[in-house]
Length: 246
Image 1 (tube, helix red, strand yellow):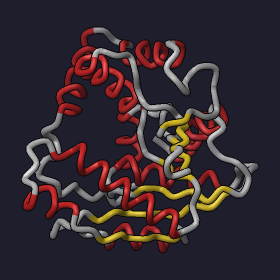
Image 2: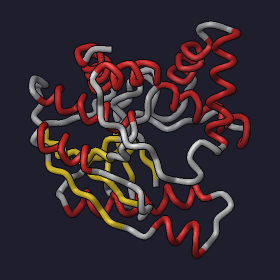
Image 3: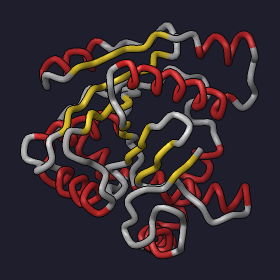
Image 4: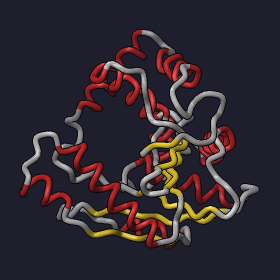
């Protein structure tokens, strides 16, 4: 997939849900994975011609795993002339050695978000862009349905009351397959997650389930996405611009 196609998906999502305002300073959370790097390329490309002027600041929360090499990402940010902050933490040690969590993902996500929020506030950013794509939207809805018994997923734009940070998700119209296509075509420097829990989660189970459903019933993912847009989930509706979350 070419960058132009990525930009067209991203611009449509940003316009539909009013994600960017004039003068925004947006932090982009960079895990090193394919999704966050695609988002970085997209926002960098969009900034050149988008009618509302905005700045972006890349941030990586280093969880403290020994074998995380960020050199290529640092080089990429230099090439794109973007500010890049790496936040050093001991989250991995707390979760895997001190607390020995059996279900580490939710505590890790909470601690990671806390570190990211602090770093972006230090950098003067009022918004943060998360790299959730269409598959993530539908998978989250299925997880909510299967494990919690409710029809719910995250919103395109979320204002976090407690921290006064706005979360935007510009990749929501992109399929994961599109992201993979873009990354392969442009030799994006993806960093493999060093987390020992990577690939063994409830989300992986639901991802596989959705893949099978879509294989046996072509178009089912698109129909589920359409159901989310029209199903009354907070923040999706008629291209609503904000939903609050504490």
